Length: 495
Image (tube, rainbow, N blue to C red; front, side, top):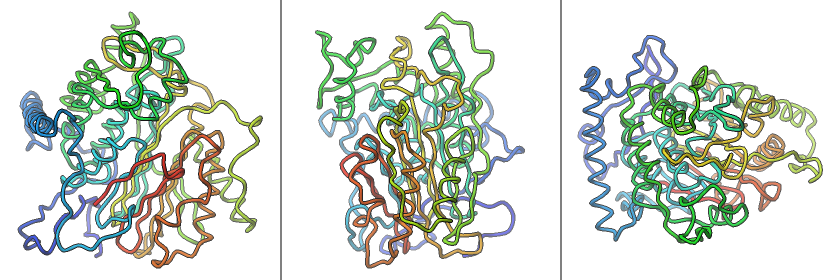
């Protein structure tokens, strides 16, 4: 269907099923502007609650947050105390047909934590779009994977809007220093900015799940337990330690009530700027510092693009590794030779930033790729006692964001039938080469419906330079496809 004249709209996932009644009865028309609108009020909570100004908008948000929290609490009691036990457990819609794992009718999310993939799927099933699912999943990872990401991390993102056929880059702004060796936290304001312009569900709805996990507890998974065992617990107690100071192992329950309080406070913030202030003011007081000369400066801007015979490649601008990625891709496509070895010799590898990645997609081809980094395992290792946040040690330097280079391949504006492919890598010193290898491998294989995406996978390798992960999402034949390398690293959920 051709988009209507006027502002281009990004609509939510269509959840209507013919067996459930008429489209007029089941589907509620909702949409958001797809690009930053300088004339649009930034008080998105006020807009979502009927334009109520000031304190009334905050009261409405608080009531919504309270209602969802009560719902989750009741569900937790029913499921025996695990706040995430029922996430993603909704039954399949009647009238559909089954698919292999990794192929879905409506939408899907893939992330390194099963809990967060379940949470993202629930947001999709609740009528949210890929931005809602991605932001909610990222906030969840900030709770359950403090070794790799968190509210102290820096975020980069790439969003492809299938309605307007346009790509937007999310940037945290230049890395700044909060104190000696401590990076300025930007996660809350960056993710809130993305949601303000592209999300559909109310902002508090995205924070209540992560806040419940932080308050009621989450189970330590294998990835977090391995990071704890390798690093030790210095500076991380009592958050991730037993009473005797030994690190929590797989299956142990951890809580972070101070972080839960920060998330709940951020849920009531009416603007992206104040969402970040919910954390920053507490950190400044906690560290005994004077406030930074300037706050976080996240931005939404046009993605870098490269036209190729198969469509248009989009990635993030400098200072991410996006420009380097396009340079490597140009040379590889021009040579027409075999896919290059994605991994350099170990001695050539610089210190690898520790980070996390997440990807969401719907069957229409809208994609959100998010990458975040604390720079080191558990960042600076400085745990703020008043906020429960681990600050990063990612500070201003020329290569501060060389780990970020999400990539999307999509058709031109007049090619409405083209498939969409999204790739995002983490934890490797050769991110651009890994992405190039994965893309060329994808283009070298005939993309037919007889060859399911989950079987093909993004690359024949079983690891990414022995330490990182690579996520691939695709929209093909009106279905969402998700996969990861290595396959055991991540959990995908969809419907």
